Image (cartoon, rainbow, N blue to C red; front, side):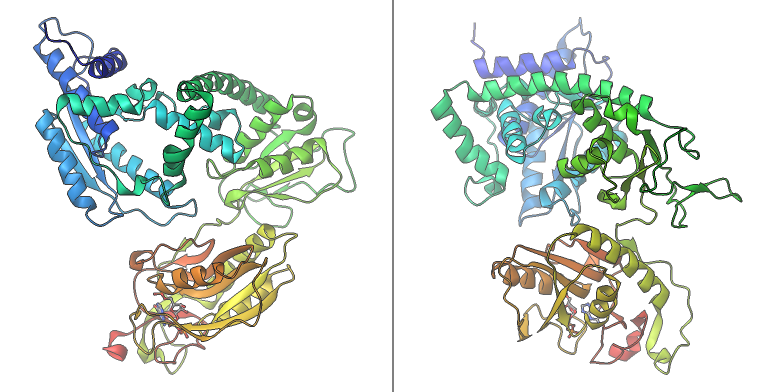
Length: 572
Ligand SMILES: O=P(O)(O)OC[C@H]1O[C@H](OP(=O)(O)OP(=O)(O)O)[C@H](O)[C@@H]1O
Ligand SMILES: Nc1nc2[nH]cnc2c(=O)[nH]1
């Protein structure tokens, strides 16, 4: 009898066990990049589906097995790689096989995170379209070990060190107990040639690739060959611990929650504590002490005594969950935020509000910890619908319409300045204005900051007198300041193709600053040609040539107090 390859046998056993609970008519998809892990998974899924289909005693798991290939479009030739992977899946007998091209938007969390988000959105959409109950992912024990090491290097807690779960929702990872060498052996055994992603090269690639290429082999050298398995076991144990702690923390959060928080608890008032919110008598809705209205989500109000009596491991988890509950985007509440919230509970000395991601805040008042959602979103706004007729000046005939009024620009600058004040509290800050367009933003933004700042100017140009970037950036005037060790915030009017700013950020970073960030009034996501990480964006606008508020066409229109689009007859 022919001997089954041991790698193939192990892979089949893993997939069979993972699918055993599915009803016979379930549709299972494999997410396939064409790399060894997912290609091996595709091959084994196809074999398993055939085996079940052949079996007259077919019971228990899926026979409809397909594949999804996501083309992230991030590197040249990605469409070819995706089509090759899809063809391999079809040759293996999977059906249907769907290729989805996604647009990876710029994200403040970096390109890997943006690609991940786009990938899962595409996988979900295809799974919904095809009615698939399960999507299989090819992550292996080596991926898990890398995940744990990356978490350790970030100083993460148990939840993060627990790595990837074997199952979450419709996603399953049958190979999480197998080594990467096994998936490579499976590909060899079934005769499929995996694609080797050049961005995974151990040197110079993303951090994960360097961990894979250098750190894991070094660990195995020093600690012995079982290091990867040991990291996987730690992850599994920490997952159990984290699951239990999350349940207990949810209970603590529920117990500490104050439902009606209008009146302080008896005998607990302090002159130093912030005045609690009052109710808007007309609507019955709560309003902030400073008069603003909620952004649609309610405060989370917690009893400080209940929280303080709880063990730190539960209290810190409860605080993190409460922050997520008021709109802090998942994964953005850092240990530093939790420390500051925790200090409001256990180290109270009258300190001010804690600024949280998503423009939420935590503050203490009358024995309560109040987590307050953003009244105004910190995220860039899509430009509002335009309706204002143009009748403001003698250039009105040159303008098609007004995109953003003076009032809208001012209101958004208020929000951006508040966020910048919070983010740079206690730090030195050098504002760098990019001449000429950023003159208005620089002047109006800096005057709204409470933070002491220095200002410097640089003049660069890539547009000349046209409406398209030449792509060649020239320094017309350099900075006067030395940037060594400084926190630099570039103030800009617009990021269009991103060519100017990606060049400028690189140029300023080479001068040894502590940090370089960007605040821009406008950004055109549909025009992006270069990836630029932008921390503060006023408005995301459509891909049209705009003028006003510092922006010119052939040096005209800069002094308009609003932003409008130019009528095509002016430049055509
Ligand atoms: O994202 P990009 O496509 O590179 O475009 C953005 C650049 O274009 C504008 O400057 P411009 O070159 O028009 O000079 P100016 O500021 O003097 O008007 C703007 O101030 C940015 O610096
Ligand atoms: N005036 C103007 N300058 C730009 N520079 C880059 N994009 C634009 C734009 O839309 N308008």
